[in-house]
Structures are given as C-alpha cells and as structure tokens.
Image (cartoon, rainbow, N blue to C red; front, side, top):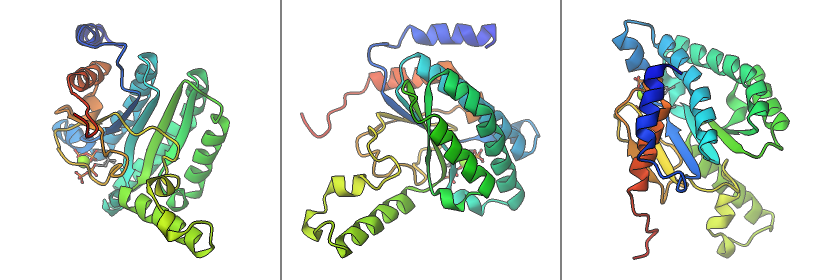
Length: 250
Ligand code: IPE
Ligand code: IPE
Ligand code: MG
C-alpha cells in the first residue's frame, strides 16, 4: 500500500466505530470498463485491475472484523457481452482463483461460490469446487464470490426445489414459508448482508441478492471499482454507521 493510501486510510479510520462493523458486506464491483476507457485501455485491462483489487479488499475487510464478504463478479446477464470480453473475464477468474488458494488458507478464509456452477467451464467449475472443499473448515471470513449469479434465477431455482419437495410429499404446500425457500438459496444458512456497496455511481441493484437485501443498507460510491481503496470501504462503513436500522419496528 502506498504512503498516500495509508494516509487516506488513517483519515477515514477516525470516523469508523470498530465495535460496529457490519458483519456481512456485499459489493457490486462496477466500473471496470469506464476505468479502462478513461485510460484508453481495452475493457479487459479494467477487469484485470479490478480482479486484483478484490484480494486487497478481502484481506482488509477480514482485518477489521467483517465476517462475510460477498463480491458480485459476473451476472447471468453478463454472458450477453461480446465474446472476447466474456473470455477475458473467465480467464481472469481462473487465474485469480488459482492464486487464491494459498492466501485463503493463510487468512483463514472460507470460499463459497454464489451462482450456477453448471454453466461454468469444466476447469473453472473444478477450481471452484476444490476451493470450496479445501477451505471448508476456515472460520475467520466467509468469502462469497457471485459468479454467474442472478437473483431471479436463484429464487426460481429455490421455488423449483420446493415444488419438487411438495410433489414428493416432503412438504405440504400450506407449510411453504420463508425458511422453506431460504434453505435452497445459494446463501442458505448465511446472515443477510448488512451493507451493500455499489461502486461507479450507478444506483441500481442489477439482479443482485433481491431476497437477501430485504433490510440491507445501501451505499452508492462514485468511485470506479479499480480505484476503490480500503479507505473507500471505511467511508462506506462510516456512512452505514450513521443509518438507523429499524426492520419495520419503531
Ligand atoms: C464491472 O465492470 C465488471 C462486470 C460487470 C463483469 P463493468 O464491466 O460493468 O464496467 P462498466 O460499468 O462498463 O464501467
Ligand atoms: C452488475 O454490473 C454486475 C456486476 C458488477 C458483476 P453491470 O455493469 O453488469 O450492471 P448494469 O448492466 O450496469 O446494470
Ligand atoms: Mg457495469
């Protein structure tokens, strides 16, 4: 980390209450393309810069006590991008996940893939499965990588599972409640996100955690994802700490 960044972190730190760090932070990592465009680079260069950054943010989040970090890396709709961009992204996921083994073991991070693994390439699929298996007993941080993730697809999948259970008599239709659906989501058993950050100035959800975000706080940062520093994370946390979460109560 450069001296300049260290100073920024120090400054932002002053405004953060370290006894009230959100347990689960989810990030919509947006703006790689615009970051590259500003530098007259190909979009893939923006994705490469962005992929590198998630390691830094994951490590930093773990250090300040975040228990779960969820990162939106590729949506079900992102398959509609030009083939060369999709290929560049898949290549980056492969490269970074391969590298991640050691670091995740070192920092006691448990890896979990959020998304439909079946549509990934055989090598990426086996990499994700191996990473989940190798890190399954790690406890300090849970890292959810949302890759080929679509919230509507996730909910439709859960509904299909519940319909199957009803058809084979495991559950009666009148007993279908929130927990019956929840147990089939990719996030089954996890705490809902406390804070969802979207970078790049866009103010939309783009099919991310529609069920799980029922009571999440949203922070929209103007910073493009490859420029997002630990200090930006602290700023978002500081903003979160000013909010009053009521969950429908007074
Ligand atoms: C986010 O950056 C990465 C993915 C969606 C895969 P974008 O590629 O969406 O960057 P912009 O929004 O075009 O700047
Ligand atoms: C959302 O970003 C998905 C990820 C960050 C992976 P997009 O760039 O795909 O979203 P839209 O198209 O601007 O809504
Ligand atoms: Mg985008």
